[in-house]
Image 1 (spheres, rainbow, N blue to C red):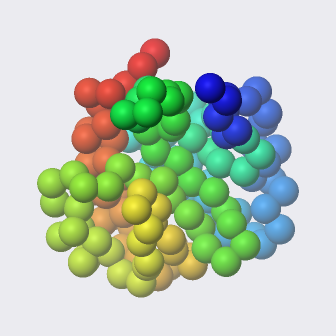
Image 2 (cartoon, rainbow, N blue to C red):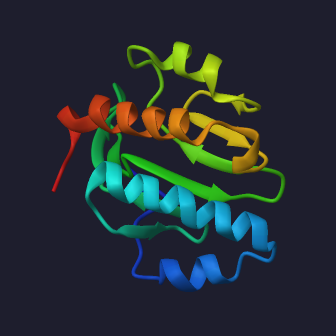
Length: 139
């Protein structure tokens, strides 16, 4: 089977975030990184060229394909700050209802800027996502 394209790298997270052109987006990234590091107790790692991830878990599909992925992570995309969180955990929908202005995908949370959301609710979402993933964690 082919290897996954997006893997952990040794690239500098600090250098990556310093290159975010918009100062407000850069500050939002620093704040989200602090929340995710506090939730996981682990330092950030670059995954591919644009994802900042924290901790990791192992997944395996029914097809047999498997790999590692961050337990939580984010990427400063062009239009949104994209957060990668576990979908489907207990209480997720109630937290999202209180979060503020956002969009969601299957395992993504999209926000334009942190000032659009309630930071304490975002922190609860991140913490709950990390807890939900704890059983699948790999070293």
